[in-house]
Image 1 (cartoon, rainbow, N blue to C red):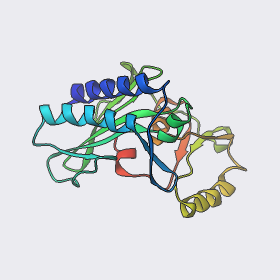
Image 2: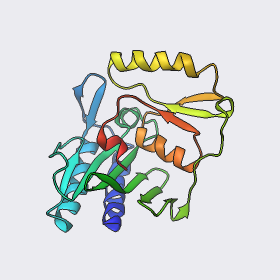
Image 3: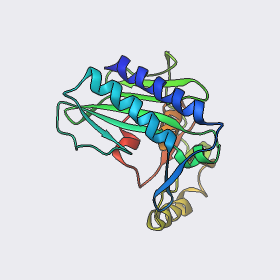
Image 4: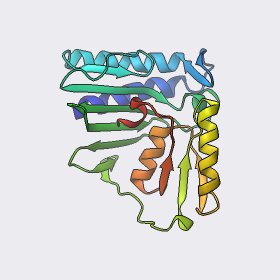
Length: 208
């Protein structure tokens, strides 16, 4: 299952990277919420591979939807996390594939195709970047911390985040808006960010 997740992420990443320099077909699926032909194509690659190898597993995916957790194994797929960045050629986005075992996180794979960075984690096995162990930051003082965040789509969420920013910004080292929650959390796992916060995430954003 881990190798399937890695292979699916690489295949999807190849699709995304190949289409990155060209013009995108963009659809607005909600307020400040975009989907492109690359999202759909990458998602199809991932779902086809998982279904071929594990036909009895459940798949929940951002664009295709899917059932809720209803089997021993449920795949949570975000084929392109950071679509707005992607549309604007801002090079911060990733493929995110998480596997839940009886409702608990079991395997996580997040792939940055532009940098060929494959983040992999499995329960009890730690986290790795391109097969090298990674570790979270040891910073304990907020005043020295780089804190990542994202703003969310709705005005309500943004207002709440801005309220929290008023509490955090005067006390932390600096802030970074990422545009890809999945990639931001790999940066926390790697120690490149000391912390990350968001209050409007979906299961496919966080599972991996």
